[in-house]
Length: 391
Image 1 (cartoon, helix red, strand yellow):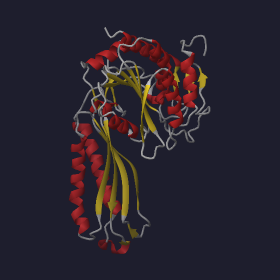
Image 2 (image 1 turned 90 degrees about the vertical axis):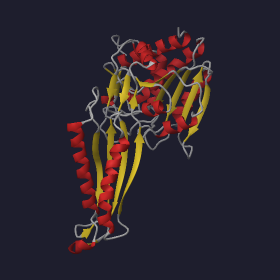
Image 3 (image 1 turned 60 degrees about the vertical axis):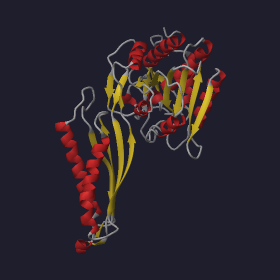
Image 4 (image 1 turned 180 degrees about the horizontal axis):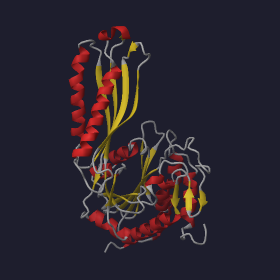
């Protein structure tokens, strides 16, 4: 750290260095990271609650310091990172490096910087006479569909009282984010009927049926772009539809019997994604009778995975508290997704507010600016002060 860098707690930096050294990218588990966190939180007198994936290779950790019979404050983050792969890093991705006021490493921004800061807060929580509890939530597999938080929510179904504020520490440059888009990820499989291409009237061309569906998705995107619905604050300010993967066919002279493609709907929080998907299913129903006339094995299968959007009112008491801790607004809305919408849906008043820039996430030479971590430390110090004296 240079003399011009903001002062950071040595504990936070040491924790971040240890967290970055743990490769928690898919398909690696997160248990070594959780063991580190659990040891630290238990030493601070926290009660620990675990929830596991089916094969117990990954887990969520929910910890509480303070009087658990009162509605407190919750700090939450996902422990997984995206793979570093062959992205062409300038330094070792799983070794923390410091250059020109920045800390480099996979997960520094998304989102081990925040996790290090919340774990660094734990000893101060233990030492303080807390009027409100502070909860720490660490989840698995956010990057592949917010998997772990669903298990955590299931485990906390009867948890009471609910926190008065939950802060998801995704990188927002310490702005308070009160809304983000939802997401439907859909895998489509078109089942055709093969034959020699010279006899294509006897087959069902799965690639052509898939192409027709993809073309209709593109037209839907154009309609949303031109007609809305629109919501200011989002970029772009409308629901987006995108086809990202497609594969099908065996040889040019064979009518293909299978084509699969994947698309996503990133919906504005108040644009019902089920109504969008109902339109897509209607297209499929229109196409299937012609396919079945050739083969009773033909069809279209659609498999959905949904993540809820976040839509907190700026006048909500939880948002007002978050703005107080962040020392001002305005609030912001973003187009990327987080676990916040699922937590809000489960009855946890939630905002997104964390250090770093989302533009650095998932890239080679991912970094977090030291001054962002300093702002996060200050935010958490104010949160601790509120937990001691909610006034």
